Length: 78
Image 1 (cartoon, rainbow, N blue to C red):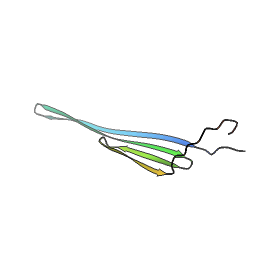
Image 2: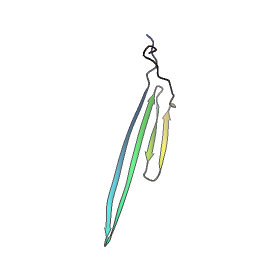
Image 3: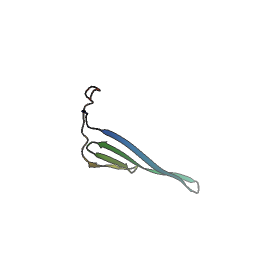
Image 4: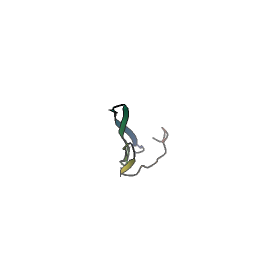
């Protein structure tokens, strides 16, 4: 039996936000902020990236092996 190596890509994300209204005498101020995180995993070999967004700025953290591109195989090749 012959087969190409198993591969996967998975993505998941979450966002949490806070909003409130500050009222002082005749003035009303709306304040809001949010935090978002996205996780992308791939394999084989295993690796991924985490992107964190702090409303004003964001950054990416990579871990594991780099994502390797591979061409899809036909059913006959599989």
